[in-house]
Image (cartoon, rainbow, N blue to C red; front, side, top):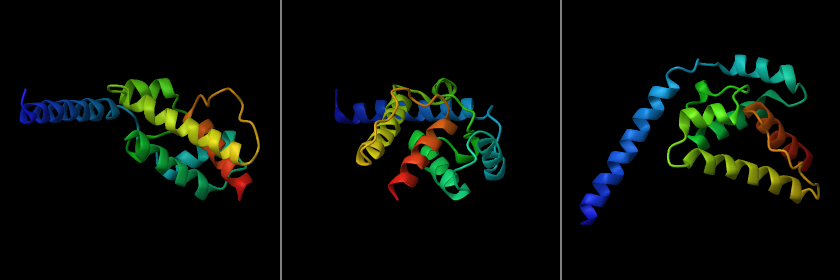
Length: 134
């Protein structure tokens, strides 16, 4: 196969995956920063709003999701159904879990073996580790 054909096939797969992702994400409700903070603070009131919004934006960018669609109540199973194509979502979540482990390791603390179940728990773990390290 020529390089051109391989590039066209890769481009076709990428376009298909983006169309599929947009179609799946369309059904998720938009959540404003204010609503996100209200839901988050109901479970984790001790994290500053600025840190929560910063981590929300970071996670959304990493997993390739519009910020307005990301809720603290989302489980990673739900996100996987919407976003996962050829394992890209699972790799991004693995990177986030590695980041949490490294933050705690730098502090000389052990991270619990249990991975966060929701986006809110993940944001809490990252923000908590960053607050301790500051």
